[in-house]
Length: 153
Image: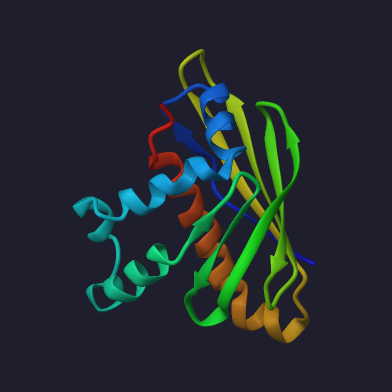
């Protein structure tokens, strides 16, 4: 197993608001809406915007699962496997070429702010770790950045 952790990200919302949003994946459909923000699109290389748009449009959300295309990897699906109220939500891959676990941890920094960290633990052999390791390091940080930017109201 190879473990990748994001940097700790500050979130301008309470721990309970963050937990409520990420523990019910239907709440994350805001990702689709967020893509239309010019500031978000400015962070994506111009030659990749259409590819990312198509991928986001194909994402599907239920209370416990999210699925959709992920670049050259193809379609993946993850399911919530454990909820620790207001502290952590754990996920596991259910349809993926690589088996992995992912968790989102949240801690309060005040009554109205919190911080989050995303960790992924992937079952990678040596060859796959060499190919995918740097992408997973960047990806887990980008995912944490995205979680820090969405509204938790």
